[in-house]
Image (cartoon, rainbow, N blue to C red; front, side):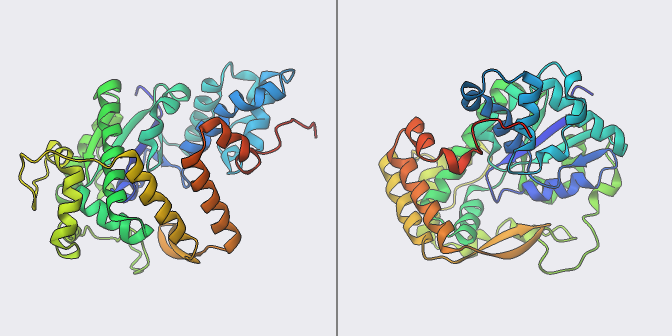
Length: 350
């Protein structure tokens, strides 16, 4: 096996959780219970921002501090006790993962991280041997689901699908098919055995029948049901109006066809028209304003859909953050929000 690590990427609402659930059934796979990829990236790339404030701190101590002060429990998987035996951040991460695998009798560690496709250069900087499985779903179904679940403008949802899968295709072109795999959600639902066999081959594993068992919990709140529901494939055709399908296809048309999806409202010869920069900003800020008045949102916890309360202080903070991100350059944005995104910049010996 080339690497003991893999990541599942894809636009949100594209079936990443379904693939995770299948792979959790493999006896040799250890799936992270919380999305870890972004914590890994942020933790080690924080060195660019924090090292100027702590130049005298030794590398081992610096890495240990970064892990232990991370906002999420990254330290649960990192082998900080033996940090002096690792020669680089890459070595530290891979060695820690390998220790986890050995302890739990598994062969490969995986993490589901929707939207990771936008940060693949960061992933490969820290995890150069990791493999990536990018999930793709019909863009009309994806936009309809994203718009309904996240209260996001339908055209913005359509554009997010286009942007995300453009990154996914380009990442595969750069990394090669031996390191980056594209999987269609519809194919996974219709031919789970065939698709999972190819996924296992890609990861260097043997296919196991128990992967096809999604669990026995009958709860209606479960995000992933214990049976494969193919009705989801074409549900968008009844949920969306013809005018809405046309809106989506106007943005996504060319990419839909490239990925094997037939157009319903537009001619195959019609040229796609992605949203322009100012359209994105206008629609994003309108959505941003509307979110100020939403005190509840749907979220997923332990693979169950739950209502999440959004206190006014959080809504105001998110509103200002999104507004400033569109208005200011990245460096100014980071300066304004450094205390929000980063812990104390200076190391304090405990």
